[in-house]
Amino acid sequence: MLIKRDETFVSVIIPNYNHSYFLEQRIESILHQTFQDFELILLDDCSTDNSREILSKYATHPKVSQVVLNEKNSGSTFAQWDKGISLATGDFIWIAESDDSCELNFLEKLVDVHLKHPEVALVYCQSHRINSSGEITGNWITHTLQFGNFFTEDFIMDGNKFIESYLIHKNVIPNVSGVLFKRDDLLKITPLIFEPYMKYYADWFYYIQLLCNSKIGFISDSLNYFRHHDKSVIGMAEKKSGWLEIFKMELRGREKMLHYLQKCKPSNLDTIRQQSEIGSRQLRYLTAKGFIQRGETIRGFLLVRKYPFLLKRLSRFYKEKLFN
Image (cartoon, rainbow, N blue to C red; front, side, top):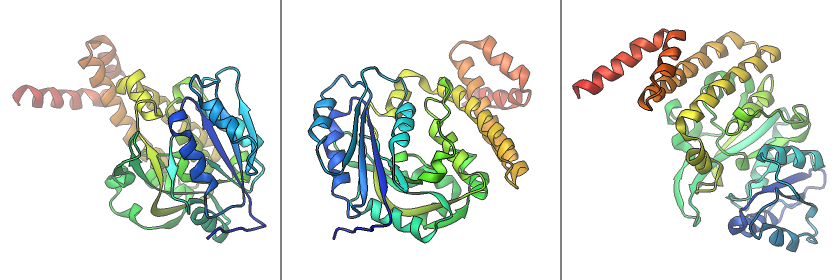
């Protein structure tokens, strides 16, 4: 059953780069949503495959309000997000990545939570993992198992408490395709801040910005299908940078998050800072160990010199390795 609500309007943004293989399926998964009050904004970042041909085919569709084909690659998917947000006119914004997919009642379910809880800045749902063939290979519930069963139930939660308990430890919102933003809140953080070291973590920072002194909603049903393949952001991160470089980028990203939170002044800032340090210490350990294992011993020991707690942890690791 198609649902139409005259007073609520959603802007759906598809930022695409070289995902022609998945693009048509993605667009169709949006056009056939049970909730139909939306505009579709199609963006292409100078793809070298036949993406532009596919997007042009949809240019005259009544749901499509904008088709923007870049003549030069922007160098960042987050620049495309920013462009799409600037073009959006809806009450809510869904950034639907071009290689992902979803259930046909995705919008219906997430819009309903926003309407019942107008105080939330964003609502997100659980996600399936799928491969390049669209086969389900797992579920992102495993990403949050360290927090027990909390993410097995729906919730509305204070944003500061969510940051303290979950988001400062790791990005527990694994895929922007599973998120529906309130436009007024999203506009408060635009233009989106982006630094080169944020290339894999900028969305995490944006969630921190949005949820400080706000609220969040979660749907435990897996309505989103997050695709992991060689050309996905995660796949490219692993291939191009390697985990050691990603650890170093995350350390800098964590520093930026804390700097922002100090300006935002949540009531639980001291506790958030303490929780953040737990994650930062683990990343410093992994980075130092990575340097040493890669033969960059001097860089590893310089890090140990700066953070003396690393000496004990690294000594224990190599002692266990020696005797095993």
